Length: 112
Image (cartoon, rainbow, N blue to C red):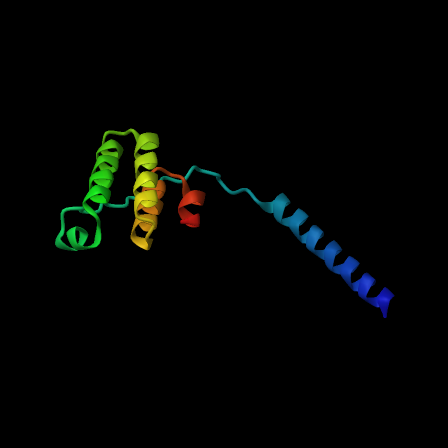
């Protein structure tokens, strides 16, 4: 029985590796870089934002948004992280994730 399991594992590994090799030989995919998605900015002056966010957190988010609009993405992302540290809620994590997506950082965005 032990040999049968070993043999089936070896056969499976062999078939998977040969399938991958064939797929690599036939793949002629153009690896064009992907553009970050066009994600609109949130309004931190809406009635919902005023009710849901602390005044200091809204101030940090507005600063982050201004930096992002000015093209200073690294500084903006740090401000979004500051806002998340200030108010570690789902809304802040979503704002951070959306900012990371706008910056083209898809893996960190997916983690948020």
